[in-house]
Amino acid sequence: MSEPGNLVPFRWDLVSLDELGSLLTGTSTPDLWFLDDLTACAGKVLARSGNGDLVFVGRSLDSMFDLLSGAVDSDSERRLWRLPLSFQRTGVGAGRRWRRRALTPAERARAREILTGVQVTPHNLARRRRPVTFVDVVDGGNTFTDLFHLLRDWIDEQREPWPVIRRKLRFVGVTVRHKTSPNTYRWQQEAAWTRQLPAQAVVNVSLDGTVWSYFGDYQTKLTRSWRPDRWLAEVDGPGRDERTRQALAEAAALVAYGRSRSGRHALARAIGREPALAQSWLRTLVTDLNAG
Image 1 (tube, one colour):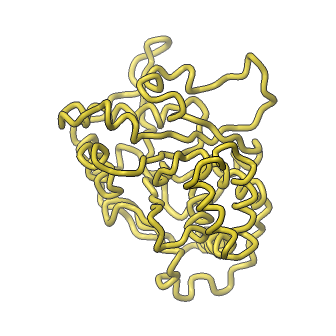
Image 2 (image 1 turned 90 degrees about the horizontal axis):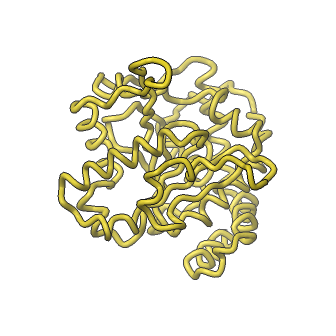
């Protein structure tokens, strides 16, 4: 359960809790009103991950990372990573010609350094046994689009075998739950790059809209947004104001719930409703969760 070293904004290790000291003293008991929806969504993300190591992009799903960090045994082969990159940046042009500016060579180089910190490099992707599964909240899919092209350009430059690597990449988008219909918007159908990957490599998990908006728009995060114009700056230390301390209490409570018997069993129940349970790796995971 990790993130790429000192290249990224500091976030406390909530699994060991050694770094927290007295930071939680005086905080109120968090209201985890979203817990059932988050747990059900996290179970589906695991089930649809293709047995990949999970890389949580940005900050929106920090709560899912925290819950799963408590639930997944630290000595297991499965790895969880945070990749707190935001690809938001200013646009150029106007009207129909408007587009986001390209990343600078220095920004691309720093992004590659950070990806190396989560063991995602062209060389590693071509030789790893398990897939890498990127997870993020998705509206239009811009973050995944930027991330894919960043990786694809790097792979081509390094001349690593794309036919091999394309089978090691997966993307799970957490979308707002809507009533399904033939006219339902599906972001992956609009993103041309998804057709370069196998059919089941890009999948979605839906989440209640209020919970999705809380994680994506309103929740107090433990680190600031980390846009490309900040990637090259010196990373800052942790906040210690009252809102951050209360957010820290919420995050620690999620880790504790993931560790608990009830939390692990709730995850197992969510996974148990998924068709992928026919696969042996997922049955093993459910057995491990129920054994806790």
